[in-house]
Length: 458
Image 1 (cartoon, rainbow, N blue to C red):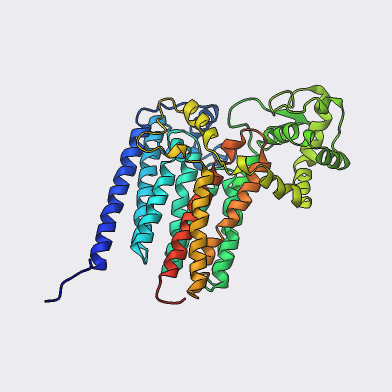
Image 2 (cartoon, one colour; image 1 turned 90 degrees about the vertical axis):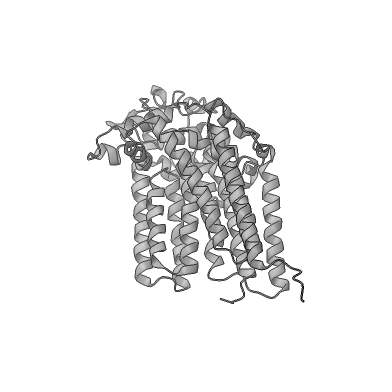
């Protein structure tokens, strides 16, 4: 009688599935335990979102008179009830990441890779600088939690070629662009990814053209509502008069932050701005290191500067960034510790001050692990897979994996936009960057591992 010495692969997959369900259970228990005692803090931006959510739906003020409309719309649908908003965001966080983990495991050619990738994603979703935001009435929560739906829709379209997932992806991207002004740039960069889909004949010329128009229109709508608002989100009277017009555009405040914190401290940039017509005098130089609310709006001696700002300030700054790529990209590398949050210590300020009662280390000490260590582990895993593919002579850079690789492009663009978009509160503004880096790296490890162990060549 022949003895069975090995467990069948089907039984192994079943065991791994039970481990996944256990991991999801731990994720839910840990997440709920960390936020259950946290109380909602109404920071100034949250108050603005509430106020705008109360504006009548069928009015231009609701759709065009504020920051991008997506988050106020979300609040309005929940009757502008802060407790309900927090509850829905919390449930959405749990559902999104649990579903993402299950999806990744279910679609894996090798269930062990699927399990490890799923656990990695749940780990990221539990980190305080991700999980804490679901207990804020701010755009960060939905910004984080729509990324998995973007990735799942894209990947499902790649492996199934079912166009309904392409439509899901477009619909999610359109709403995502309306959540947060910087999201619009992320969405715009998906034109490149749709270009890759067109190149590999996943979509025809007409669908590529339609998708491109939709993405550009989504960007334009979000950018317009963000930068031509009739008031600021905080409700402060951050306005001034230039050539008889009342100026309350939201881009002005961060631009003044840039002027005070960056331009006036950079001789080369200051000289460039001066040659481009910016009036530089003692009054302006005295604004060095001052943030946007310190005199920029109301000092009479800065009126010439404000007139120039309205006429050509933003265009001049953008022109400088485009014509000086060494500064534009070099500064990202120079301040990489800030942009990519190598150490997560700075994030404790946010969830300790905004979320009293939030326990960063309930079961696991995950908040003690610097991002730099996580980055190194993910890079090593990626290199192992790539080297093994070379050794085994299997092409794993193909029409399935290349669009996932292309998700690096939005991260680069977002790094440039967020870093050069404001000189204040940099850690909060760039918090999406390390999140995207880690989630995208895990997704890359997953899809490359899938292709490496796939018996059929594409």
